[in-house]
Length: 439
Ligand SMILES: Cc1ncc(COP(=O)(O)O)c(C=O)c1O
Image (cartoon, rainbow, N blue to C red; front, side, top):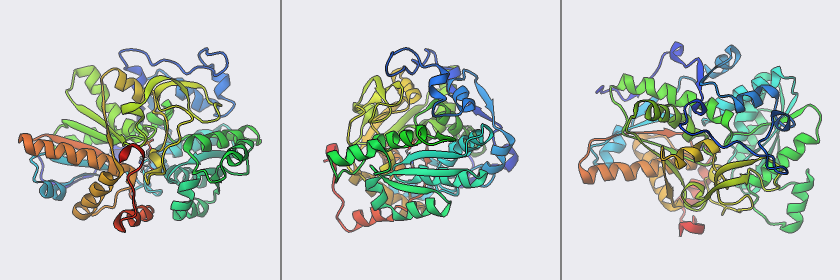
């Protein structure tokens, strides 16, 4: 074991290939189905909203896909990201466990989301797209896509879930600073948004509704494509750079993980850290416990059904085999906006089905208690989404204390919470409520 706290990789150690878990699943992933015919979708259905090169990646069975030079160039603005050992948190918990975290909050937008925004914008640019439309929950994805569009000179329109639009005005301003146009969703810009507003003018909105608006915007605007920040196979693929770096950094630290943890909304940061370790589990029987931490009020993995469902509320997307609470599920307005999604990435759902990963659900108040403990020991204010992982890690570290086990825990700190301080205000001032199943 190495006594350093920070494990930094040299620039040249940044992975040159993304890793595709599809190539290694012991059972194939059920394909997405056409919503009308219920037959497996063909690439032409997807090219209505995505460029051909990304559709090819979405369906690719290749194990390794080369990261284009132009994408590597932008990645080097913040990658490789650091791995740190949380020695002060370990001490505060009195645990014999060693806790490491892979910190993705060092990206320009403050989270892991640019890892896929950058290649998605790049592939769109070379395919001739001029304009991208998307949705965002907490605003982390929207600011990442806005940042990536500014790198490659594309226009960007973002439908931001209404509750976050009001809770997180600085995220909206960040997107506008990068040059994007931002609407609170449901909006009056689209037919579906107007329909939702007519049904309930005071609705908080949801990611499912915002996705429907962004897709409608895409198919009704020339030279426009749609971009999704989670759930899809190509997003999990791009995020695999996280876990590949972590494997190298754990080697530098001289330890191997026993427990691997990530928060899960649509599943992308979790997949990014976990999938390269899942590969080791499949290939060499490595005995890791891999845990996805989700909100108790939007518990798709722990309480959702595994079945075919739509990715959006208006039922425009193909049907995906995933853990879902139902495409019309309206999550309560918790402060981790990025975790308010009814479904889970099909690849993450498949891992759960095959017993390769576990999941836990964490209530909101406990999440913020953990977030404060982390901020006051490690110094980084975590994004509320990431604090779900911290909470699960603290539970594991306490278990290690009680069982006197010296396990190694590694988790992904997917983003910083510096633009989420309104959520901290709500907690610190005693206004935060338990929500939904949280109570
Ligand atoms: C910081 C952060 N972590 C996690 C998530 C959840 O998304 P995913 O499950 O795709 O990583 C989000 C979503 O916006 C986020 O902003």
